[in-house]
Length: 294
Image (cartoon, rainbow, N blue to C red; front, side):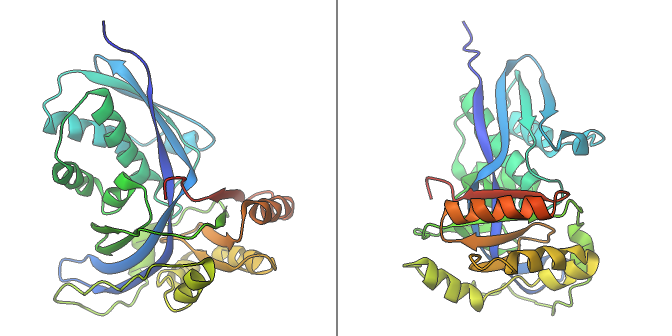
């Protein structure tokens, strides 16, 4: 008898604490270096055995994906199915809790969660390097999301190196519900050309949040300014975070428009979230912390 117990995976939000663009390669891609963490907040994917592949999308941001004919979740499922010559399917349910095109890796995290969940459901034995290659084919951020642990990303994002220790802190995520196209942000970026791969920026072991903040002071997000030109409301979000005295650092994640504030603990982050929701009821505001396994 087939075990029809659902398998669930968290598609954790990916936060770029730093994002430095080293230059533009001849193939049009940009070399980057980024310090990344993943949160307890994210989309949720549930899979159960079925004869064919199907996808149902639920959750607060489901309507944003109604017209998407080639969802990244189904692309990931089909890619794994084809690579491993799996003849049966799966019924997939995606609970979409994260805003679309928001710079926190929602689609990439969903694809990575699909690969993890279906590998378990179909009881596939696949080498990590092959699974990573599948992930990279789906998108440059998917390999990092596959592990969903604190890491340094380099190259075009495909080179992922785990960060062994990350101090505890909480995050306040804020999105003005204005989608920002990554391509448009990069088009505004004046990146110098690079002919050879750049050496990665060293990331030390952070003994404390204070040490992390000191490092982040020297390593920002190079996409923040061009994203603000694309969506000026990002400046309003950053200003709102900076106004809170308990916010230790405010910055944009990825190519935007989601911004984050670093807080000492969940109590301060939650209090700031409650205040900001009252002041800006049209924004998406969420307090969260790092994944427990980080």
